[in-house]
Image 1 (cartoon, rainbow, N blue to C red):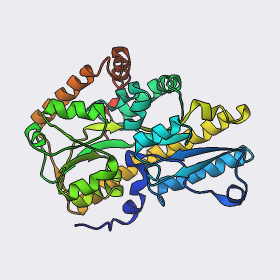
Image 2 (spheres, helix red, strand yellow):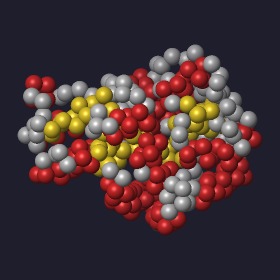
Image 3 (cartoon, rainbow, N blue to C red):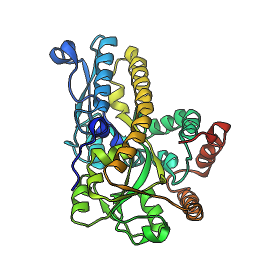
Image 4 (cartoon, one colour):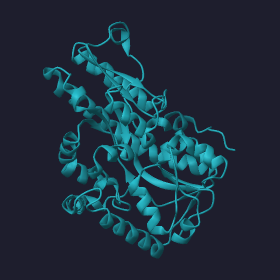
Length: 348
């Protein structure tokens, strides 16, 4: 077993697991001694003591300062409130007001949000930004209709396959014991298209399942791979991302309506500015994390151009198959049109 000795990257890796959360502890004298008048309870699977959580503390401190301590957050990190489906149930029951979710949880709120996670959709970050600029307002509206307010988008990043055996072809993937996040229809559709019968598990059970060989292939971002310690249980990663993972912090509409009207735009502005800065840092840290994973002994596996074309064709098939199930054709067309601009020629 390899132990985490990756310096800065290991310390920051937990930042974005499928990534997402708000502040885990009060910040400063006002936050510690004077609870805010409106406190939003937010749960996340993200670990404590990371740069991501430091950013979230900054959000909490800034919100409290700019609202005169009228609004603040109480955060439950480390998955103490359960996996994303459990957190969502607790929000709907009123036990929590919101959560930090990856696409898995967001899709349970509003299935159409998964349109940004279609396999092999994006070639680079420029395309991601084009799609976000064109569609974020609309996706936020759809989320609002589903009963939730998006405080800010915090994308997880490009997702890779990490495995015990090298995976360079569809046949390689078809013979692997692949984990799928329990209840994730988009991931299940992709693996079924390849001929894989995936092993559905909560994210909290994956590291043990890798250790016992119940699964031997997982998918996640490089930062999350380190944060979750999955990189210590694999030997290879396929050097082509299979999808781009979205993420956001959301609260129920009912909870957001308890925020005084005069402070709502302030809360949204602060969250979105901080989350955007965090997303840009994530992109840099993900690149660094992938290099560090390789340095730890996990070997990159190249995918030949003909095989990559077959994977991409599968992705297009999955995107068409999910029309009418997760999202309408018109929304998929809007994404494809958005990413077709000239900036898409930039590199990842």
